[in-house]
Length: 157
Image 1: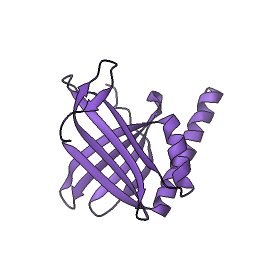
Image 2: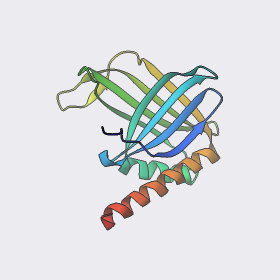
Image 3: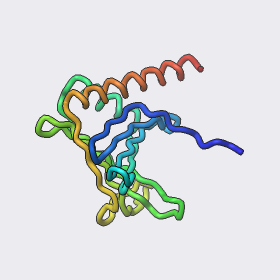
Image 4: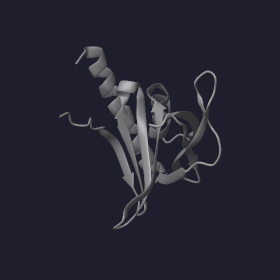
């Protein structure tokens, strides 16, 4: 019997009602943003996830680590277990002395070139604010992890 592969967590942030985990999905060349809302004593009642390409992450996380403002929207998607298109939107934006991370998951429409375009209202739309300092910590944590991944890859470990 095989054990499910764990996704190492690179960074986590929690508030009283929301959480954000950035996880390793680098075998696919991406970071996974897993976000959710919860009620104390009842667990998560809404979750969503999206992916950020490693090359884009290096630039965005570098800007965040230095406290530079960021305004990034990334549209991706894929097929669920029933082969239904799911759109995944990741937004990272500096606004009013906060870094806002938002993930939307919802129905999608597959374009001829294979991209997934949002189609209709998202069934999950969750955002979480971080202070500028927490945004910097997130940026440095992700950059350090990406650097370690690159070293392992180059060294052939």
